[in-house]
Image (cartoon, rainbow over all chains, first blue to last red; front, side, top):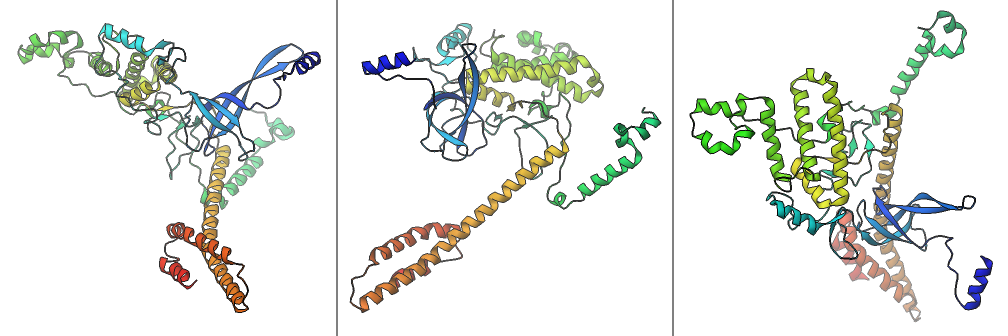
Length: 175
Length: 299
């Protein structure tokens, strides 16, 4: 290791090591109770020096997101802040790379649905005779119109422990 | 049944002695009479059956069956059958058949709204619609005939279907979020995240959570009150500051010295003007526009 570093230094290049805190991280958003923030779940790799192999480890970071540009399930890029903003918030959201359930193929630039293109799926429907009442992408509003009504996936799952009389906590599941 | 000698001799079974039971009851009674229970009262949630619509997230029942509907297999010949006299037409209607003849039509009505095309039986849209119909069908059966609740086959079937539907909805969320939102609206289903660990509902643990909730809310409320109080104190403080600065300037002028507080006076005036709007929104009764303007004019 030292020999490679010295050889690189002599050639005028800088050795980039994999140690130390990472400035940019890619992770998945999860529901969180901290205001103006999102909980990002990042997959990390731990090097075992004895077995000479990597082991996966998941770390959670709280990223500052005052405008709520992220939603649960989105794949986001987060950047480390120069100074800790609050007790929890250490990072900030830089970009939403892949919004959940609305993924664009980076090579072709086409919209995807699972493992297929949306175009191909619609072509199949047209071949069989598309149902007039079926879902239409053109008429569909952007994501979030059911949030807090019928879609409670933005709240963490929790069992109902108390019969509240003064408030309505719908996202709690019955035991 | 524990032998009597063990009750007396062994310390392991001491809690089962009548004296110990009494002590325990007394402790519980004292806890329940604590002042804290006047603020927070724990209501244990009702335990629901596995098939209960409140648990499965079904917002609508199956729907009512009209006995005048034609059976599904005779619907292509409706033109011919409708011409028949009423007594003969009745033979081809749902009212003359089994319960499943009516529910089949309800399924077709639901599928007409959601399935992708006429021959679609494999898409997630179809699966979710079909499972919702089946769940509601069995829920209807349980509600109308309580004896059917003893049927282990149906109970297991409903539970499995509810869990499968949750899985399919989650798949749809990941594949196509807009379609997922549309289908839960059309079918009337609530989607919730499942808890990571199935926690047992306990009295003590639940009260702990409630106390934490209460404390946090109290803290927030007190902090807000204190903040508003500080905001209110800003204006009188600036007023006194302005008065003292004016006095200083007057003194300096009296001994023909160049004034050293001109910048400060300008800054405080600016701050007061800025505060005026915010202050009025927080506490409109405490201070009026006129009071502030009077002070500016005098300065």
